[in-house]
Image 1 (cartoon, rainbow, N blue to C red):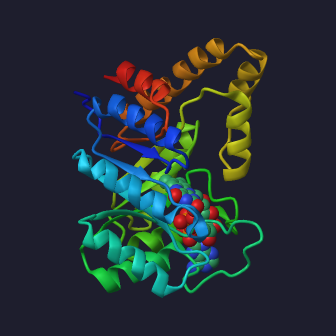
Image 2: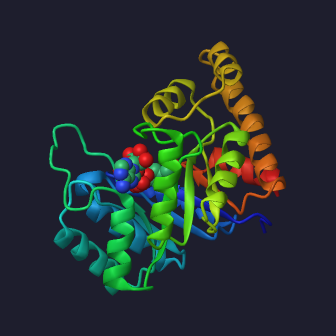
Length: 275
Ligand code: FAD
């Protein structure tokens, strides 16, 4: 049994092989007794059915699974239809996001920000859903300023969110500072760090560039120096991320949410070291 509250994020598989791989992954990770798992959603609804199918597949096995839902590019009517399906399937936990418009899709939709989606869900469904929102300790890449981003974060919590999950980061100070600043704005919900295990240098740099997460120079340099030596990358990544998690938990993080990328090995190794 893991003493730290953990949760896992998956994405909806697109192929039958992917479905099987995810079943195997989640069977391994279920042994770590996660509090819940979450399943991502493609903005614009590209994975709508996949998200629902994946969540229902997990619920069958008794795993509490929270679908992500993004509002960008959507009408209230289409969001209501999705929320209705979740409710009628007994799903009570959701991750509410703005999302990003896929390139080529121009329409913003009826709800422009996650705070509006949270307010919409609360207005339409009362307390049926436990709502998580996203937080950015290193700030959202489109934010006008850190202060503005923090205020926007506080706004979406005040709209009715129960908890937050952060974008991944490798700088614990950024997280603790963010939590302190959010508390000063009256945010009193748990802010759970999002953890990205390190297994692949080029993929990590690409993701981080896209989402505005900083890979510290010393970590990037060491990873780069390993070249194609995947074992060395994994071993170093395991050390770095485990130490990050240890510090986060020791200094008060309320739990850890792992971005698994539908693979069990790296997440499992970190959790086992933490246990
Ligand atoms: P918001 O909270 O709406 O913020 C977006 C930007 O708008 C920020 O810069 C904010 O400062 C600004 N802003 C907010 N309110 C206002 C306002 N009133 N006026 C002016 N500016 C404002 N993406 C997906 O497509 N699918 C997923 O499943 C998914 N899951 C995620 C899970 C987590 C835990 C995280 C951290 C991110 C996830 N994302 C996902 C990515 C997310 O959709 C993007 O980061 C997106 O750009 C922002 O979404 P948000 O909900 O944080 O937006």
